[in-house]
Amino acid sequence: MHNGVAAFPEAVDALCKYRAQGGVVILITNAPRLNHVIYPQLARLGVPRAAFDAIVTSGDVARLLLQEQRDTPLFHFGPARDQSILDGLTNPMVDSRNANLCLLTGPLDDGIDSADIHHPVLLEMRDNAVSMICANPNPVVRSGDRMVICAGSIAQMYNELGGKVTYAGKPEAPIYDAAMTQMTIAARRTLPKRRILAAGDGMLTDVKDAVQNGFDAYFVAGGIHSNEMGEMQSPGSLGRVYGLIRLQFTDVKLAGICDQLRWT
Image (cartoon, one colour):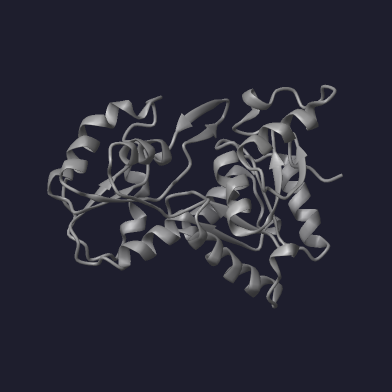
């Protein structure tokens, strides 16, 4: 839908036209914030309200997980802009040394290009048996013309160190359960999974989520994997990309591949 700086006009146009024909669009995002924060953010980026029916965020799911551990000493690992997810919670807020639970929303500095800088604090948390809730499972995200690391990269390092990680967003089932609830509300009926298409540009989130949750997948190759996928206009490009996807997900039900989401 956008690159973190501005909306993709063709993608917006496609969703608006799809909804105008009676289709239902639920945006599922690994944003570590509550959905009410995302609506105005999308508007500022140029995504009109007519492009979608509802938004479900990994922040919504993370908050539900936090509410199950109300009195557990909590460390927020992430930038201050994500703190709205904590509003109204009763957990004692502590530093990493005194925590039993960590809410991971992202790197402490947007300028870093590797999770390695956080290795010491992750090692300390591992030694203290701190459980982590990762509110943004994406390893990277596009911001303008550059790729920046997300909470998923840090969570992966913590997991490799032996720490316990619970992922709140894509590709895990809870965020899709929440999305299906919103889809039922918007459609005013329960839609079978065979009528639902999971579209996105993330191999380890969007394609994997389709495989794990029983949806058909529609892969946008010109997103975060554009360097790996190469030029989509060259002869044989669709077959090459399909082969790369099948290497990772042998049982994927792939409905289509495109370079950018557009109406045709």
